[in-house]
Amino acid sequence: MTHQSVFSSARGLRNKNPFNIKKTGINWQGETDGGDATFETFSSHEMGIRAGARLLLNYEQKHGLNTVSQIISRFAPGTENNTGAYIEHVSDQLNVHPDEPFSVRGRLVDLTKAIIRHENGINPFSDQFIADSVALA
Image 1 (cartoon, rainbow, N blue to C red):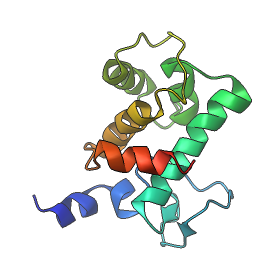
Image 2 (image 1 turned 135 degrees about the horizontal axis):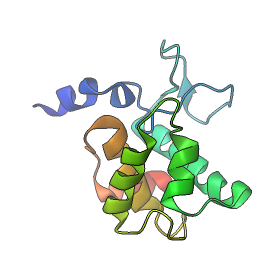
Image 3 (image 1 turned 90 degrees about the horizontal axis):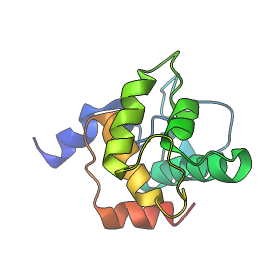
């Protein structure tokens, strides 16, 4: 698979929205009108990752969510996702129990990598690219 086909294979990567953030009326930095009626589109993958990181930080700072179960249950509700499988996947990637509290800011790069992998089936981004992108949040 070529580099270009990786980025065209999954909707979140095509939209430069690796978290698959749904449209909600929030005016995101780097948001574009990419023509997707359901999901946000961004000017760059960096801006899409930044938006996802902002969401995760807000979950902790504004809502007190600091476990994988709490975060993923809000981010990917069971009405739209297999939330249990999502929680299990992210917990395994972070090597934490689903109900074990952790610092979202402290684990933001790892949490971002796990969500991108789950949302898109792959994570084509380097650790440095993700770290640089979440630092913008």
